Image: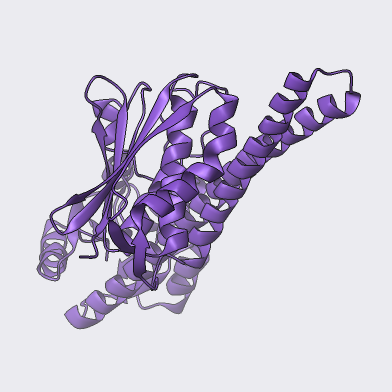
Length: 360
């Protein structure tokens, strides 16, 4: 059945007593029922929302079950909708015609309640399983398109800067900026690729935790991002407790911090200061990255850590945003026994806090 709700079954029969009997049986079994007393009413109600299955009387006046099914089969939106015929007709010819028309099953009247429920439940589960598979396929395709788009941007930046370097005739300062751009694009591309691979492999599970000096893992992350910060004239201000130990996994903690620092560099104005803080807080340690950028609006905070969500704020240096980094950072933080959240920075800007268990 659907997560959080029952499957929806439309019962179509011109006899009110039949609809009431079948509908009552289905409701008691946990299904949501949409009663319809003619084929046209069923088609009209489907325009407002599709059920998960249709129980369709074969013999009805004006528009019989075969005509209804023909209309459903002709519409792309309803072609895959499972239809079970309810019929008093035992003739082989009619049943063969029912399957040839697109029905997935039939139940004869008078029906056995257990048999009817079993057939409805089976075809609802098959339909909902197919829906989930189709949704997963759509999400996978969207993910591949986004991954290809972001990696293409990184490679394009590297190729453009390389071509300018190869052309020659540049001053030392220009060459240094181009080299820094190549390094920054390569670092960002590798960081994104590693995030994608981590997600695919589920490597956030079962991490071996160890005591780590908070100041050292922060400094390692700063060293990786130093070229990217220098290219925008930005500097780091460190407020790190040298005695503070956190419980974590070095690569996982480093990846989260690199992502937070990379975002601070990306969205804060050039020449500004990024403040990094690591302090004890009760039994935990709070590692903070504070920037002087635009911050995150109250409206966007609700979706901040969802996959492939990009913010309305634009990177100040034309960098690309994947919409994947923060979602994976949040996932890793919780796998480490901690958490990650956002707050407005006092005086303006963003403050991201990675909280991890503290080693006494």
